[in-house]
Length: 187
Image 1 (cartoon, rainbow, N blue to C red):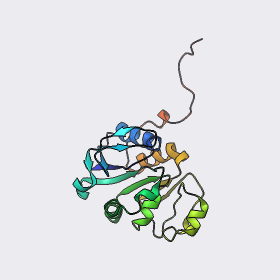
Image 2: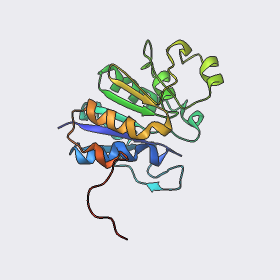
Image 3: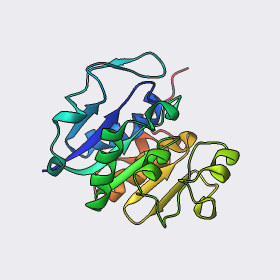
Image 4: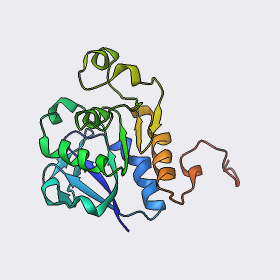
């Protein structure tokens, strides 16, 4: 079974990945964390060691890609190997799930061309960016256009669920929904 590539880069948002990673685990979908360095510190300080570096991966190992947002997406715009990897995954029409600021990386890779999207960046940035089509921006928590799912950070639960559904995984949505629990209450 091919894997989901999970990109990790400096100041990535850990919570935005939480539900998607849990659903991948429930659905028994293998993942590989891929880093821009040997150790990556997330925005809340979590230190991660990726399974492989970006320079060590073979694109054919993957059928999907998961991208977290990060505190300063501007730090990644000139990371050509990262943009190239995203472009290759997109050109294979593999599933891509991108949240918060990371859809900007999709735009840089040409993956959002002609596609509706949402993004966790200010309206002024969307309007002035030469890489984002403001006409295709949707002001909603999660957007799916063909094989690409984009979301704002606060949409991380629905984002993870949509990604799991897109990959046809078996998982229990009740883990993530605020539904009444069965059983006795303790007093």
